Amino acid sequence: MQRSIDFNCDVGESFGAWRMGDDAALLKFASSANIACGLHAGDPVVIQQTVALCQQQGVAIGAHPGLPDLQGFGRRTMALSDNEIYALVLYQIGALAGFVRAAGGELRHVKPHGALYHMANACLRTAEAVSDAVRAFSPHLKLYALAHAGLAETARLRGLHVIDEAFAERRYEADGSLTPRSHPDAEIHDVASATQQVVQLLTAGAVTARTGERLPMTARSICLHGDRPNAVAFAGSLRAAIEGAGWHVAPP
View 1 (cartoon, rainbow, N blue to C red):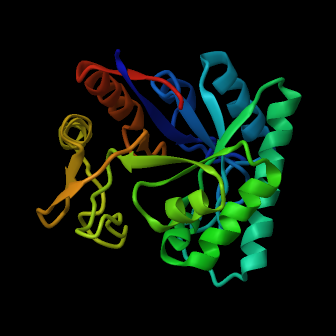
View 2 (view 1 turned 135 degrees about the vertical axis):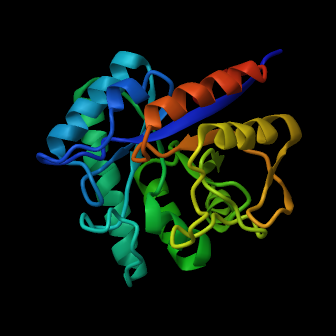
């Protein structure tokens, strides 16, 4: 029986006259999409158009809620109360779900964006607020979270269906966390190294930390950031490598 893995990409991050990436081309390689919900990026028209693109290409649709920080692209930590985080996440899921429902589609999952994602891994109360917002909207939604990290553990305890994910073009620290973007080696800039990391994960069940340690890791989804330079070329090469390693790409 052929093994299956998801390939998720962050999309819908344009807004107004500002354009980010080529979502139509990128989605040809993805099996799941995380659509920005208008606070860290995206706007109502972009959301509508991105939902339509996902439906046209048969890509599973997920909400990508972030912190309300357009200038910082949702990657700057904010001091928010637990209830503010709960409300922000619930608000964004509902906004995207409205467009998906109007288009006759199905919202399949939620994946926090940027600083919110990392805050939820570092702080139990933030993880609980995010998980509770997802569950309050629908206990049937899947939650994408960093493999073996705090949000994944908390969400499971809250009764959610967690999809553990690994990253194709981000470096890992020895403790399994992602290397902070403030570090010069946080990102993998060449497709060959990103492909090597993904193939190692699939074939050996591990990745190599930035400092050389071998990190055992299992994941049900692989993520590629849609805002990175040459995202479409990366996506095509990574999808080919995944399938070349004997895996079928499909949503979970």
